[in-house]
Image 1: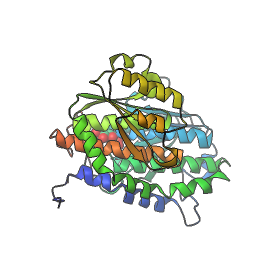
Image 2: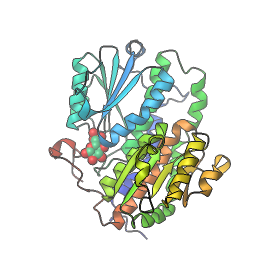
Image 3: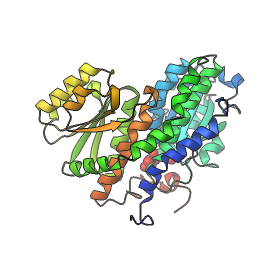
Length: 374
Ligand code: BG6
């Protein structure tokens, strides 16, 4: 029996995600599937004036914003800019009163994110905070805020807040699309699959033993590349961030499409590759990449969909196949990040890292640490 009192908060919070995601759906979806996101500045009158979306955040929250961009542009048909808060203002910021500026922050305290929000505010943007802590400096400064309902967070490296952020941002994209008269017929069908997210994440968590084996194998290397495309690419970045932050293991998230333009040169038996790829998306390019990795002796681990849509050719060429359940493509990012969160935890434990306080903060820690101490 695991001594749960000693179980780190990091793994506890990973395992809280089905409940957090279910609470998030309950909070924002009414009984007849209408979105409960109508209080200003999410009222129709305000949203109808929006002509572009600007999303800004730091770290893991930035990766939630990156993946949200794909859904925002697809559903709202509005240009959506996503940038690290630390870069805001270092270029000519095209933000005005017709911009919806969304600042994402689990703690609501990250100094860069607050500064980026205030810069957007100074340009007349409609500012919205997506936070897990309220009140917080971010909620005090934004015109309005929505919550991620992840509950108290005791670890610095965000997991349950991240998947809740990703879900809430998807719902926010639907809200904005609906205010623009879009999404009428498609939403109910998509909503069906949205309701399955908590059970899908719960299922993936039951595959933890597979991840333990992956962590043991990875422990004998010094580096890993995590590759993906499209809305899954931010998950490659996030998985790499978790491995660096929580396991102190060097990992690099990279565009699968870009990888053949240079980085492939360093691939060999010393560089395992984790590829997040699904059948029907750039199949030939992914197969060519895997062949190139195998020709160089690099181990390839595939995170992909199992079942009738399993890509047998890619799976046959991979040493490890991590089977994700079938899920509507827009929901794949939330499901795909789970094995990578678990991998960071188990590798961190193998490398004797304090996974709850791995030490990834830069100065001004009182501005980014949780608002309370466990
Ligand atoms: C960093 C943490 O300090 O802050 C990351 O190490 C986190 O895990 C980032 O994602 C942003 O924090 P917040 O609270 O603004 O989402």
